[in-house]
Length: 352
Image (cartoon, rainbow, N blue to C red; front, side, top):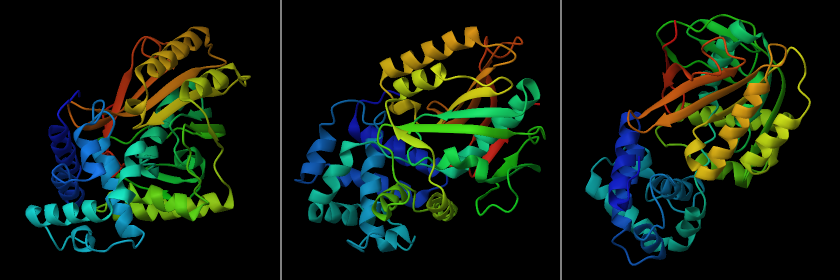
């Protein structure tokens, strides 16, 4: 959705948060409107944002900065807002304005980069896609993730999933992904992840407490389960860090597609809620590469593309799958399998 007006973009993001069941975060984001009226560098940069502020997730950048003030202990005046004790919007506006005026120097740098909302719950949709693909292409998968942030979802082979009664992964895992499931369960097919590679333009090291806290700041304050999953991911990474490199997404896809492809294994590119942050030319380059690789795919060495991305018209995050070689559905069409909560709290299965 192309919204040019900054105030309108902030209000859209607040409404999106409300629809996603995050009223506390919505109040904080609406409070950002008060920052626009301050004589601060943060307010001036927000007001004169060079580009589409919603496409760039500018309101979420500021929301992360404000949450970090609270989580780091730098300031506690927003504590009653994050704890749900203050719900009056005018009071929230006043507190957000005060924080912007007091901590302008701390908030301003957060505008330099988009949020990295790495969320293990989103991998529920990815796993559902793999279960579905297993019945068509076989059970073995090599995963390639772009926009992997801290690589939390590259560790999905270590998680246990209960998807409407369909299960996958090690049952004794400390990371249990059990979203509210709507509709039929995905097929109970075997899934074996034999290899996984991830990249990000600015990867986060989960084993570094400073970087981990920054990542936690992007978690919406309403989402207690998300914070629990983040702590579990940090603990798992401390035992074996994810396979993650710093690299441009298009360059990484080109590198991985050129790597030897083991027979009997489906190579899968996947990403969750990051496509919007890529430059248009990068999206086009990746699409062209996947289409070219898809034309060369065989039943012995299949290729698939799993996306969990936002439909900005419906506010829904959609799980779509495309695969090659085609059986009349794969390479020719994108299959819309499910819709999901933006952070994986629920999944509504549409296929079957």
